[in-house]
Length: 116
Length: 110
Image 1 (cartoon, rainbow over the protein chains, first blue to last red):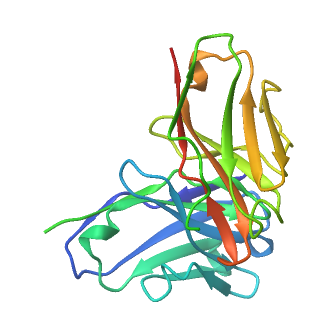
Image 2: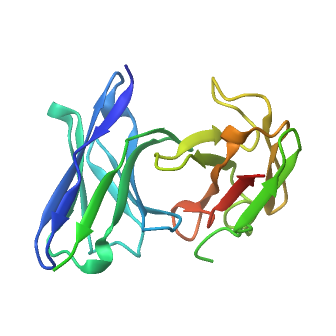
Image 3: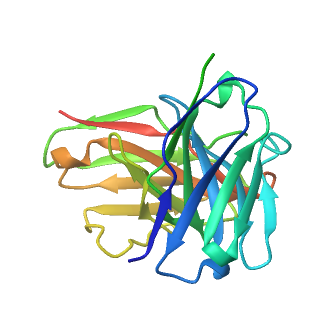
C-alpha cells in the first residue's frame, strides 16, 4: 500500500529538542519530494519546506529557515523534521506529504504540544 | 502576499451547488496551476483537485475546479452532508519558491 506513516504525538517543554518522522512505503521514496506542512490550532496550512530523498536537496520557506531542519534517510525511506529548541508557538499539527506539482499523498499528522 | 485569499466560510443545503473562490496574483495563480484540498474534521488534508481542474481517482465528479487569470474556483454540485469540511486552495508561488496555501474555507451543510 502506498502510504506515509508519521510518528506519534509529542509533549515537550520549551527549549527541548525534537525530531519527528515520516516513513514511506509502496513507492520509490528517492524519486519524490517530501514536504512538511504546519497547521496551528484552528488555523490554515503552511508549507515549511521540502526534501528530495534522492540527493537530500532541501528547500525551506523563508519563514521557517533556521527554525527547523528537514532531512531524509533513503536507507529506511524516512523523512524527518527537527527542532533544536522548541517554543510554545511551535505547538501545532505537522503533516508530511509527497509533493510533485501538488501534495498527492499525506501522512496522518503528528501533534506537537510545547508547554511548560 | 502570505496566503491566497479565500472566504472564511460558505454554506449550502443538501442538493445545492456551492462555489468557493481563491484569489492570488501573477506570481502564483497567474503563472501556475491550482490545487484544492479537502480536510474533513479531525483528519489530514486530502487532494481534491489538481492541475486547475483534474480529479484524482476516487473523487466524485460533483467536485470541479476552474481558473481565470489570477483567480480560481472550486464548485461542489449536489451538496451532501459528508462534504462538510475545510477546503484549501494552493499554487506554486515564485516569490516563495514553494507552494502557497489559501487561508481555508469552512463549508457548512445546513
